[in-house]
Every structure is written in structure tokens, then in C-alpha cells.
Amino acid sequence: MAVESLPTERFDETVLGNDIVVVDFWAPWCGPCKSFAPVFEQVSDEHPDIKFAKVNTDEESALAGHFGIRSIPTLMIFREQVIVFSQPGALPKGALDDLLRQVRELDMEEVKRGSHPHEGENQEDTPNP
Image (tube, rainbow, N blue to C red; front, top):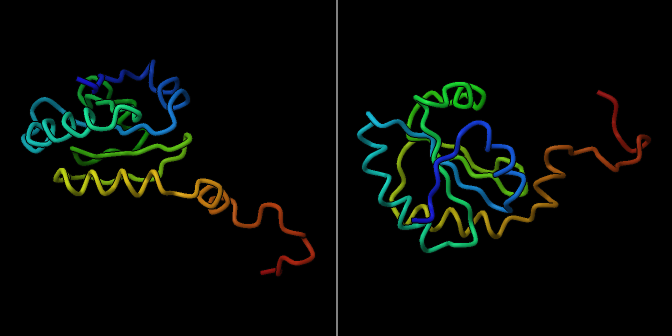
């Protein structure tokens, strides 16, 4: 199984040490989480170059709070340490496969520029509000 449990103390090193990290925030009592688990595991087996991890929100409540997790399951995807996707709800396999295809195709330079839209611009060219 390519999915690993992700405790708070290993979260940063996991995100920093992998190009793409898919995190499933879940809880053992959550029915939709249990239904989504086999899909998550199957997709993880098909994408060995991507890190798949699960955060048990009952055990890691501070981490869940840090990311504002209010609904589970919530899927969060990091690429180059940037959150590129975050959405509550279980996804069918086809949707998750398509989502991973889109994440792989992202132009991360453009994504990073988008978070700082005026970076590198000449101050004289920037209109004053």
C-alpha cells in the first residue's frame, strides 16, 4: 500500500520532500471517508511518483485546525509546497485521476506568479489605486 499515515511532526518534511503530495483528511467514524479509502489507495498504487498520505483528524486536530478542515473527507493537494487543490468530499476514481493529470500539467511558475501578481513589475508601470 502506497498510502501512509501522516502525523503533525512529519507533515512539513513530507510536503517539502515531495513534488506532489495528496493528503486525505479523514476520521475513523466517517462513513464517506471509509468509502473513499479504497479509491484513494487504488489511485496511490497507480501513481508511485506521487506521495499519498492520510491525516486522521481525531488524532491530529491541531493540523486539521491549521488548514481549516471543517468537513471530511477533505482532499488537499500540494505541488512544490503550494496548495493547488483543497475540497471536501469523496471523489470517484475517474475524477481523482483527472485531477492528478491536471495537477501534473500545472505551470508552477505561473501558479507562483499568481500568488504575487505584481512581483517583478516595474513600480512605474503599476497603477496606483
